[in-house]
Length: 77
Image 1 (cartoon, rainbow, N blue to C red):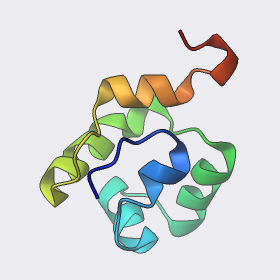
Image 2 (image 1 turned 90 degrees about the vertical axis):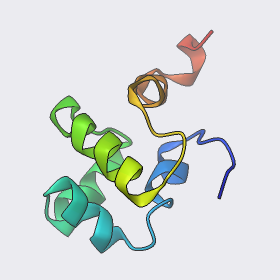
Image 3 (image 1 turned 60 degrees about the horizontal axis):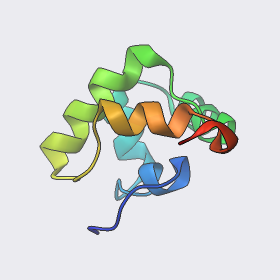
Image 4 (image 1 turned 30 degrees about the vertical axis):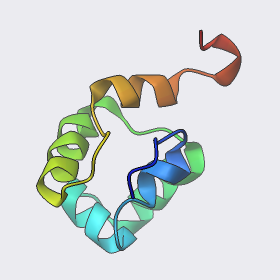
């Protein structure tokens, strides 16, 4: 999937299973579910997110993306 990631849903669905993502981040499936519902990933997990995406060959996941996803739509340039 080489399309641009534009939302948290796009980001989370890049992993083949949510269980794989929760394992990559070192969080419980419930914690991951709450991140997805809140549309927010705590900053302490960003390095794990970026590293896991690189290991899995998931393109486009970097710190700039995570910042953009956390900026409310009405405030984005």
